[in-house]
Image (cartoon, rainbow, N blue to C red; front, side, top):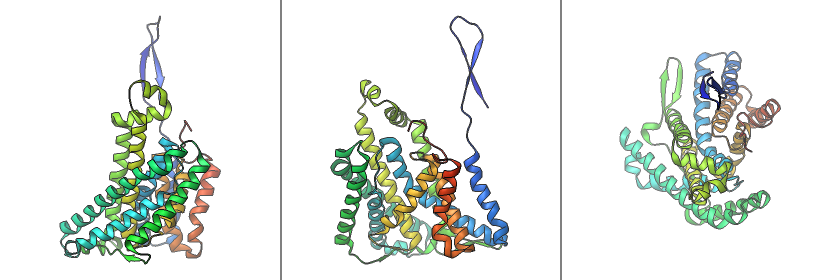
Amino acid sequence: MSSTATTLPGTSAPAAVPKASFDWKPLALLVALAAIALPLIGSPSTWLTLTVAGLAMGFIVFIIASGLTLVFGLMDVLNFGHGVFIALGAFVATSVLGGMADWAGSGVVWQNLAAVFAAMLVAMAAAGALGLAFERLIVRPVYGQHLKQILITMGGMIVGEELIKVVWGPQQVALPLPEALRGAVIFGDAAVERYRLLAVAIGLVVFIALLWALNRTKVGLLIRAGVQDREMVESLGYRIRRLFVGVFAAGSALAGLGGVMWGLYQQSVTPQIGAQVNVLIFIVIIIGGLGSTLGCFVGALAVGLMANYTGFLAPKVALFSNIGLMVAVLLWRPQGLYPVTNR
């Protein structure tokens, strides 16, 4: 464990200031899950396929859940309407990819990726804009009132779903993968789907960007300081409310991005897609520790691995496996894998 040295008043000897060591035990949970699953599955190639599939699913769930945990951790807002941003992102993607059908179906890799990334950017912009309106009209009047936040945000999600039906219709809409993202890459005897590799890459980028923004930028410093002592930050001349509104919009945009990825993962979208994923993302942020970005990341990967392993080994209990995982984690660590200390 590293340490820094400072000089105390009236003394010449430097005093060591201890630093908190990083907690690796939650990461060992992921290794333990994979290690336990290997002998149960038997075939290393099947295990590798399921592991990569589980990690890819975990990365997608992390992107969706990161926005929710960001809003809760920094703003103390219980947003049960998060699903409407997911659904909006997914439906916007159907329109964008439909408008770029020539590129999405061309089979040229760069054209396929350009179409997907265009859909993601437009979906993030639309979800972020909706998030601004959602925060202004629905969330702002109930800051600090958790029960009212739950009720009014659930109502907002229902209204949002109905508005989506007005625009895109109530029926299920297909969202096929572009040509270059179909099929699998062969590693030895294991087959890994191309889209899952893309999901892993995008999830890593989002995770690193979030950690960098919160820990290495002035905006991140102000946001974290505002959470600790809002009045102090405002006394220095900063408009903390604007920062928090920006956080809400960023969280909504991440949900829109997650909606695109989940829609492509399912290859179809419905107006209820957000509500269907809501349960899963709440399990993730509870496992990770409410408001913890790193905990959300580890929790999402654990949920993805557990869902894929149990789906292969015992399909009948797959639906309940993540609830069992959540119970086990809470028995081990009641505040989650990486609890937020100031909560």
